[in-house]
Length: 214
Length: 214
DNA sequence: ACAGCATTCAAACGCTTGTTTAAATCAAGC
DNA sequence: GCTTGATTTAAACAAGCGTTTGAATGCTGT
Image 1 (cartoon, each protein chain N blue to C red):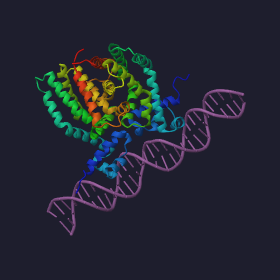
Image 2: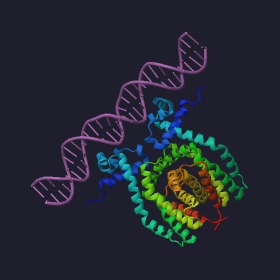
Image 3: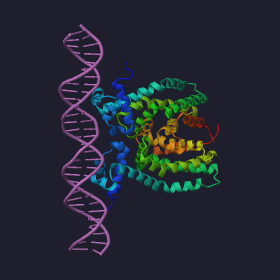
Image 4: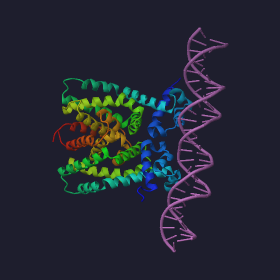
């Protein structure tokens, strides 16, 4: 019978959308409630207020990302933890990672909303930032660092390895965060499968270049 | 006597700060006016309203960036336009560019506010995006594309060259946009001169790797 | 069928918002 | 010194905000 999620979940989805688009201060709970097909008071009932909904959305994002990239992440983490990881193996794993994650980041509507919310939280971090960092960003970056370090034959704890991981992350995220400029400069109407192919190819080039000396 | 800028300018500066921090919808003109030491009605008088101030801030940013990186940009553009530009020359120019621009982006308080405002505008572009893209981003990316193409010996009009330029841009911007995560992951209290050195070194590594084959 | 609890609902509450108004103040020009 | 125009000011406006309220509804176990 009930083919749609419950009020709580619908509010989280609508909140993710609105908060991501106009920020915490800019969002208004009447619009969120309307988009969720719920009563205004439901937000206070379920989450204790606007701020409570915001934090719950942050948690919702962490769970959503974990559920989406969980299998891939587990595989990569297991691989990165192997003691006798060769640079070539690490590079292959890294290539696999950017292929999957890059495509997801570039095309998935869910990823679009996640990225919007998270980026806003970066701009002025609140309590929600810690939820997201500890839940997803931190461990993802740690895994990436391990792989990059293996490719470059660096100490995985070294500052350089961490910086290199951020560089790789930046190359993937620019196509998400600077989307408006990307579309305009490349004269793409939108980013569909064909455009995602080109972005993924660019990321693979970045991985291929990692650590080769001139 | 008058050692501070006029009301109009103070409103632009305060607006840049507030809009960048909480977005257009989240900002409130009373706080902006108070920060500028001006009356609320001054916003309507000088800019015709909140939206008018927002667009004026976008223009203010374009002018500010142009004034700041103008000399460097002119130098690089002249160089990139040379017909017989060798890959080595282009690489040297690119290195010079990331050195200066990277440090500015990483440490300058002005650049911090610019980046915040611009990034928000990327998240949901309005009229202000066109002002910023046409005024700064577009031509900066075009110049970057020309240099990258020269290094990689690509057609400067090719899609690949443009994608490569975005990759480089992403590597520089990630340290600005994902600052909260960067600070936490690298255990830096803030980004001062020492930290900027390391970021610039990372960017120089990216330039050095450009186009070398494995 | 009923009681108990969770959930939803419409209405109202102060408070803050962007904007408008009309008077006050300032700086030149003649 | 007075006039003209530009600028600043305090006060008021209606509309929108997040939150609270108390009654209505739905669901579950007995």
